[in-house]
Length: 75
Image (cartoon, rainbow, N blue to C red; front, side, top):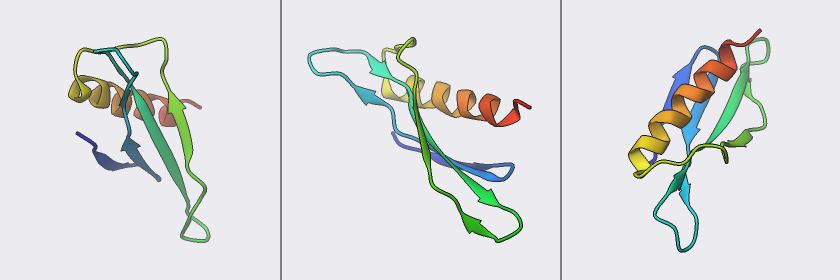
């Protein structure tokens, strides 16, 4: 289950993955910030949360989206 959402001036895309020979899912997301002055998308940045694992891809993707929103909200 891959999902994308807009949040503030960013596009968040969940990209959670499963390690080989493991039943656990690792949350991963990419952020693409929109430059409000030029109205163009920036280069996406990718973030893996190797300190968190989940039983399902859905759980990992939901966590990834929430984690991305918290990262965006940080001053």
